[in-house]
Image (cartoon, rainbow, N blue to C red):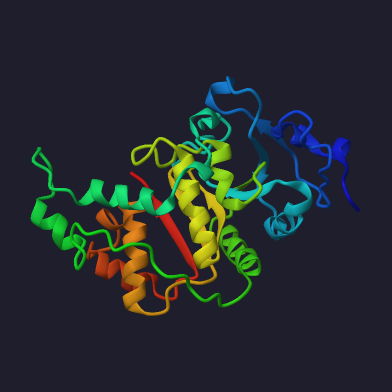
Length: 285
């Protein structure tokens, strides 16, 4: 049975601009929840519908299938360690800070971030320039360009359904969020997610790169935390040479994945770990 506009709990349709929800329907019943405004409640409208409790089993995939009708992208949401209401209940996100992903070229963004991390630094830094060059070998300071598209193992949406369920099982306290985004990559920009604020204060830039990964690697955004991002990947690199190019993109997008990740903290070691990886996870300090 399809739930119409007035049937949904907690004014879920309020997350859309005025009038934009009139053609939307939701064929999936929602658990109890409410809408949340970002930026301390000063935003023009809420941009997130948030469930009161953990996401019920299997609900993410049903909402994912309903996305073309509802226009609401589902997210599994993790809270801050020791303060589970942050950032979601507290509205610690900032929609007004986001630019449109369409205004950015993803390769230019990644090349710029790569330069930021590899340019010699003369200040008081715990990492020597020799160490920086060793971490990013064999490329050093030279941006290698975008990696070639992968070959999907399976349909990206079906792959996302499976791994969203696995994420929900692994972290059963994760709640459900719904964001009015036409594609999953745009959810961070629409929401105004601040998890990577120490890397970029514009979530629209992250979404621009995620759009490119959707197209090249069958990526789908399945969850976010206070400073974490969880992606399903239907077309990961299948051999080390290509994985190294993908690792360079990951390093530019989220340097902490390499600088503070699993040892040894080098691009080459990181590349080995993402060969055939069905999911990617990112964390910003």
